[in-house]
Each structure stands twice: as C-alpha cells, then as structure tokens.
Length: 499
Image 1 (cartoon, rainbow, N blue to C red):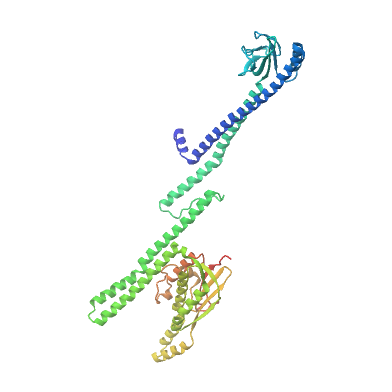
Image 2 (image 1 turned 135 degrees about the vertical axis):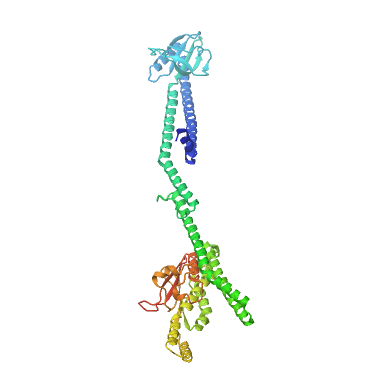
C-alpha cells in the first residue's frame, strides 16, 4: 500500500485523530506556558533590577551631596570593582564618557534624565576579538555642572533566564510529543488491533454466524467488559434463535399428526349420514382442537417467559402458600386417579417471583406426577386382564385397590443449601438419568409416556419459568437403589432472598 494511502487510512482512525488533537492541544498549552512564564519571569527580574537601581541612584546622589564630584567618583569606582557590579558611567554635557566601567554607550542615552525608555546597547572594555554588544537598562540623572551620571544593569541575566525557560519548556514539549507517540504505538496500536478483531468478529456475526464471540483478552479493561456484555447478549440471541428453530421443527413434526387427525375427523363428519355419528365426530374435533389450543398456549407461555417479557412482574411471594393452594386444588384429581397426595410444606418461605408462573409450574409438575406416577396401577390391571381374570373380578380388584392407593404424590417445600426448594415426587417408573436432559426439551416424550395425553411441553415451561427466576429445575429418583419403579422427583430450586 502506498505511503499516502496508508496515512489516509491511519488518520481515519478515531484513536489517531484523538492522539493528534491531544498533541496539538498540549503544544498550544506548552507554547502559552513558555511565553507566559518567560514574560512573567522577565517582568519580575526587571522590577527587581529597577528597585535595586533606585537604591543605587539614591546612594550615589547622597554621596555627591556629601562630598561633591570627588566623593561621587570614589563611590562609583568602589562599587564598579565589586563582583557582578552594575554599570556606572559619568559623561560630559555632550554625552562623551568621562569615567566609568563601560567602553561606549548607544547614542542618545544621556539625552533625557530618568529611566531609559528602552534597553540600550553598550560595549565593555573586555570585548576584544570582535564587537560584542550587550543590552542594559539604566537610570540617568544630571549634576549641577551639566555632567550626566548613568547607573544601569546588564540585561543578560533576564535574557538567559528567558532562554533557559524556553529551552526547558521546548524540551518538555519534545519529550511529551515523543511520549505521546510511544504511548500510541504501545497502547493505541494494541487498542486498534483489538478493535479490528472485534470488527472482524462482528462481520461474521452479521453474516449469520451467531456462534462467533467477540475477543476477550482477560485484562478486565473497558474493551473486555464491553466484549463480555456483548458476548452474553449474543449467547442469549443464539439461544432464542435455537429455541425458535427447535419450535419450528417440533411444530412441523409433532403437530402434523394431530392436524391430520383433525382433518380426517372433519372429513368423517362431512361424510357421515347418521346424526349421532356426525355429533360424535364433531365432539372429537372439538377435543382435538382444544388440545391444539393448549399446545399453542403452552408454546406462547414458554416464548414469553424465555423472552423475559414478564420479568418486571416479579414481587415477593409466599412460596409455601402457593404450593399449599396448588396441592389443595389437585387433591381431588389425585384421589380420583387412585393416588394419595402428601404435603410436607414448611410455612413462611418467600421468594421473589411471579405468583401465576410459579403456580403454573407447580401445577405442571403435579399433573405429570398424576399421569406418569400411576403407571404401576395400570400395569397391575393389565397383568390381571392378560392372566385371564374376568371383567367382574378386575372390577372387584380395582375397587379393593382403590381403598388403599398404590402410589403417593408428595409436595414438599423446604429451605435447602442453595435456596428455597419445591419438589413434587411420584412413585412411577421415573426418568433414566441419561434421558433427563432430553425430557425438558419441547415436545420430547419418552416411549413409556406416549400413550398418555400431553404435549411434551410441561417440563419445558417449568425450566423456562425457573430460568426467569434465576433458579433451576433438578430431576432425580424418588427412591434409591435398583427399584423397577424408582419414581421421579422434580425439584424447583429458587435462589434465597437477600436479608
């Protein structure tokens, strides 16, 4: 790439433009400081020089008043021999130097009495090997005999100080510029590389690859925090997209059969001649339609929960009361199914959540326990029928068995190590450990449960509700060991409330 094009690309970078702007601002500030500090220092030195010269002039005037020209010359000669002496000059009325410690003075200096209005040039006696001119400021006063007396101070020290300060500030500016360039190369280029990596990953994500993640260096700086937040958002988007894809696939596969049955029943109703047959077909259509409506309602509820659209409705709720109300509501249904409801609910346990959703989750778990926890009973009845037992004997057996339920459904609420737990246990065949991650997916039903009514969405909804509440759903065996019917315990673990 040509140098001009490379520089053009470089200056399109925000970091480079900001660096250049900062360097320009630093340069302007440094230049202002140079002129301000040097000017201030020079004014302070000039004021100090004038004050000291005023005292010198007053001393010399007093010496002249005491002893005339003789005392004046002695005083000026003595002071001119001191280290770092001022300028002492006596000139005639025509401006010609008569005595003093300078060789010559710029013409016109002796014309007016008082302070010289501008720095004037003068030459020293030791300026050999070429003309060396110096600048000074002085106070001139006239004697009674027309002679002029000049007491001045060389301005070399203020000039040197001004030059020294300017050199120091220029060096500081140079160091600052070099430091800015070094910092840009050390930090700015690294930041630009990280931005380029983020841009490359973003382009892949825009192209549809949601598995891409923004790079995280592990330094914990602003870039890492931003990348981590965006990665979390991308993970959530990927999860929602995957859920949407799964829902679409599941609807295409699992709802095709009930829709086909619905269509066939509608066809039978149209072709039926007998009114009773038509009525039965229409009732079957209504049953199938209600089941489809329940399926879509469950899907809609899962989508709303997973999208977090009702997260703002979380309040402090009494979990014990919700579980007790749900158990009381389902107790007649449990007894009708030939099972027994057992409650072990610790009072006064509260969590932050949505009362309706938690109640829905408990209802789903109890409903599953009712449907799948009584399979042992069906197996017994089936075995009785297959062994040649008559229908009347089977009825007697069922009546006898109804007096003593074959299985129990236990609803338990307690405080656990991780928070508040609600568990619903049954004594059915349970779920194999290697299938527990599958049964919480949408429309997934094990072979043993396909004969039972349902959509395969109950546990999916419970898991989505627990994710919304920051908790988790845990599936385990009710009974330990190698029992043929270990049962299933579904536990909803809610995080404990902050005290």
